[in-house]
Length: 221
Image (cartoon, helix red, strand yellow):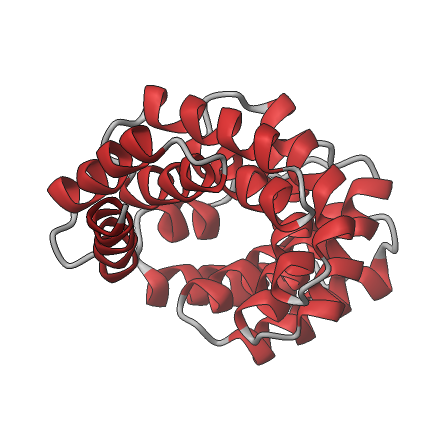
């Protein structure tokens, strides 16, 4: 479904929320059967953290056009912010089913399942997100965490190596890389990775802990 450029949308993109609301309200009045206006209004409400109200507008859009994939996605984002992760997962899956095959939608589906502790269900979505956008370091990092949580530490280690190669300032990726190294008793490499995380973020509690554990291992030997 094509989003029509509108004054309201223009205001929204510029962060002029009041002007956007007025413009979209008048568009809804003149063209009440057009789902696009409700989707845009829902996005506006989400942008100002009115997620529950936003969902009402996405629902209205879907009542006018059940194939309005942008409404499924928008409602998914709103539910995710409200920490209603089962709902957000379903909505993002509907968006994918309806043809929204981009990396963001797959990533958000994966993250909904991660938030539910369903790492096996998250796995294919996060994997697809990394395939669709190999420049997105965050989905690659989350995919690495997912690999680790489903027990594939070796693959997770390789993924974290990729993340830090692309983004040397990713403290959490360095920390998790250190964890995978220490899992395989590569203590020298683990120590370096923890230190790298601490160089980037000196208050990284977990990396500090990891470093101390390895140092005490070394002194006990």
